[in-house]
Image 1: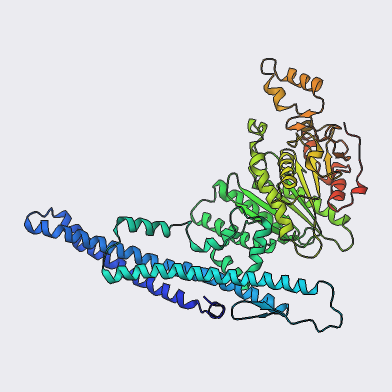
Image 2: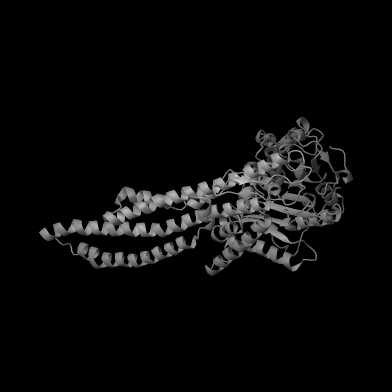
Length: 574
């Protein structure tokens, strides 16, 4: 397929043809049903015997088989035409975007796709100007060739399918069992040709973002309308796109559950909590920034990612991972009576307000709460790091996506924050981002009320001077004995295990070395110590991101988020 043919192709004709085949199929389906009810079934049910019956039976069977085969093919033709119209549309979108980019640079594009440029007319040409022009032209040419190759291959495949259907129609032969199986496999869900155009499952967020931006507005709109579920939770897709698509999904799914009489279901209640949080955000523009729904699904206990402020334009972005018992309910509107520190959206908003107050001139802030994993309940499952190990790669990918989709020249300052069990997710994810080049690490990482972060040294995170920890002396979670201590002390009991833990490994904690200890080597900041009469045992554990604590915790974290590390109040590590 040549450049002019793809650029000027009117793909509406393929859709019109698909509609015509669908109409023909509907009429033919009725014909097949009339044959089945009027001939095949009555003959079978009459238990017809004799010479005539023996002669008629194979003819009736063969006719039924051919009708069934033709019915399958008519079903497939309409679907094939639409699938390949989609492929042509995407290739056309990429071609037009490449041509637009060439025109914007003043390049000329030949009929074959070759890209050229005029020589400089300036008396002074900057060193390397010619090389830069050549590199830009080659990049655009590669995109043009790739689009033409995609369209040519799609054209070949569709032509082969239509040729097969034509041969069957000409010969009158049925499909046969093997052919039916091949046709069913080729047209099954998951084998849609348009998916070949999507980035591979292991594609990095940077690759996803480059793919999305390679589409022209028509191509992007096609994905929004036809395959929103394929992109709405995809890291690397711009925040504004994800927000609009996820809000549409959220409202549609809630309406569907309501219509099905499932408003008392757990799925409905969790999704409704997210919807109510977004409604509260819209209703209070004076006290909180616009929220972006970056992710939502019903997987596991429910997933939700909300950013207060646009992370694609903010200069300072924080991503906060909450700990045990966190579900979409934790991100919903704060209930009454409200206990400060118990609502993770409120904690995130607290951080946004304090960081916004401290931002640098010309700066802006986005604060994200990331609940993209199944946080354990407050039961024995919290003793395992399995949930954190499963969630860490997704969180690392999300952090990488924050950089990939960011707009503007200067990269954002990104701070990763984990509280309680969420600090284990954060620690494991940070190790991934600094050791695996397919990820991008944050600039700072903050651990709060941590039972351990899955490593023994801050240096393992390869972020010297940028690993911070807040731990209240009266937060019991930061004093938990190690898992091995408890596991090996079943004969003696928990009290003995704790004593052994303190005697033999004073810097140990549940998931590795205590990040607040000197041994670990992080920078510990002041949070003050506090207590809550309503919850004397765990009151301190939930107050790190609340202004009500009366201490410097929230301000110190906001100072890290906005790049004011020198303003952080440090304390000696225990």
